Image 1: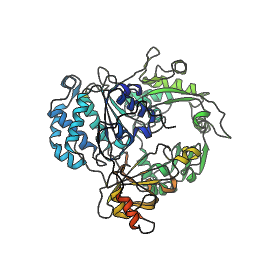
Image 2: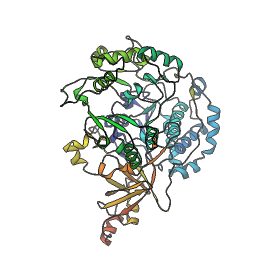
Image 3: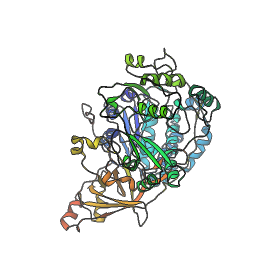
Image 4: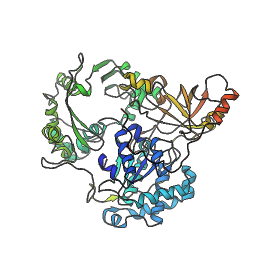
Length: 562
């Protein structure tokens, strides 16, 4: 995130796109509602009717996978009507003319046809975002998990630069991280092309620096991303895998292919706190300690580094992840793994990572958390990024074209499946499905389907249905609701017994290699008895959700979900 969570409540406008914020990030959702309560404007772009739609001034219900067209259509309005921040563009950006020329293919009527959003709503949203500053953009995996996810993110960056909404309070481009400490893992170099702090492995000076620090020869060639690893396993090129805190049997697309790839490995090690679905394929399972049983740090979605303190002794033979890894390295006679504490590791991190250089356990204990970049011990941390200038110098406008998603509905698979999360469960349910109270609130997988689609298929709310894509089938209970867009069905991926990722498309973005979880073509079939006339009548009486102006916000912000 370029900005901080506490800033959202003071934004004059928030544009939330591809994020079900109140379900997936409830604390941030409270800040969004606070902004509305303070008089700020809220624009929500989402194919589904989510909780934030009830607080929004404008709800843009785009078809899944049409975000680039929607964003470029908004920007065309802003440019055509002279609503951009020309001073910001002239002084802090480059490549604007090429970007401006690319807007020609995004006439509003064409954009409306692509997205399914009325042209007037697109224009109103553009004017609202451009006319209320500071404005902040929030997005999540509804933007990134597409075969054109990189283009989606570039479009968001274009919009922020076009209006000068970056490099100042309560503005910016703010991706909301999907899991705890994903930001910290990336900061620590858990990516195939960077060392810690996003120092490129292909950069010779960075390579020499880490070779000297680690006492080892390092390759300048980037490694494989996760999706490439599973292809390599399936083809027999990758023979051994050490997997930590990941459950790809449920979390990755085309899950049948994932299982086949794991079965082809010569050796699989899984390190986790529970025996996950993936761990059941392992040759060796290493029991790790939970967050409450270890020391260290987490870095959250706003770049804030915070202390993790042990309050319980590890259960049984389990150990902290770093202890397990260091013990294995020592048994392999590797040098540099003789750390005594988590603090020793963090000291090394600060030495080799410029953005963490001023952060210490002592400062974190006193200050409660510091946001990187924090380059020295006197630095207070960075509340928001890009003040005065961009890291690359000038911000680069990118000309974009609309590309449809990899799979489109057809006569055999006439519906679109999109996936997301429930407010009651977390990711693959490894932890949350072991909580009795959460299982009471979210006991099973549901297939959310629009009443008109349900009627045409003879499906009544609560009946079992079979959802089939080109990759497989799953069965789950139907939830007939106009919260799901007509032509679109929705599932979560929390339930092993009805794994939505058996269905999802493994096609990836060409740059980020992120799979297209959010759009795949499916068919839905009723697996129950034929529907009665009375049941059909009950479907017809379902009341659709209207894309109307926001309801008045409550007098007090709603409590965050536990």
